[in-house]
Structures are given as C-alpha cells and as structure tokens.
Amino acid sequence: MISGVDIVSKILLAVTTATVLVLFIGLKKAILIEKKILRLEEKILSVEEKILKIDKKIEELLESKEK
Image (tube, rainbow, N blue to C red; front, top):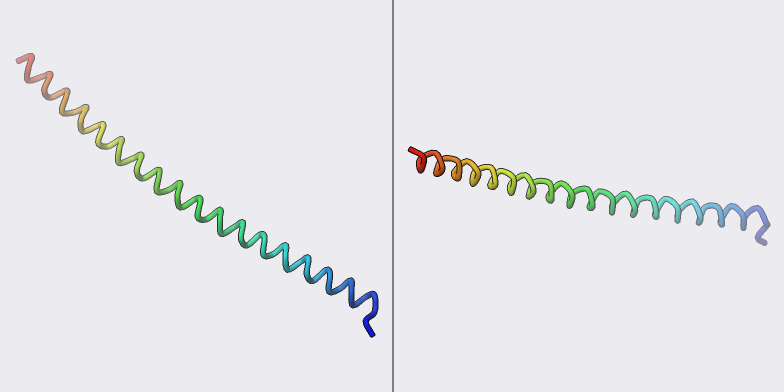
C-alpha cells in the first residue's frame, strides 16, 4: 500500500531531478554560447590586426609618395 507521504516524496524527488537536469542543460548551453563568443572575439581581434597592418602600409605608401 502506498501512503500519501510516499507519493509526495516521489513527486518532490521527480521535481528536484527535473530541476537539476534543467539547470545542467542550461549550464551546458551557457558554456557553449561562451565558447562561441570567445571564438568570435578571436576573429574580431584577427580582423583588427589585419586592419592595423593595412593602415600601417597605407601610411608607409603615403610617406614614400611625399618624399
């Protein structure tokens, strides 16, 4: 025979388990999103470096043209 306490404890266990699973999945997604953001930041830095190199070359060309 199942008592009311058993039913409540099983419901609480199920809810707790579901909550932990949701938090774990959310944390996993957050980590994946953060990794994507870091990759994007690396790409942005790479583009910035390329722009600085181009800018430097333009300055050198302008200086050589002035001479």
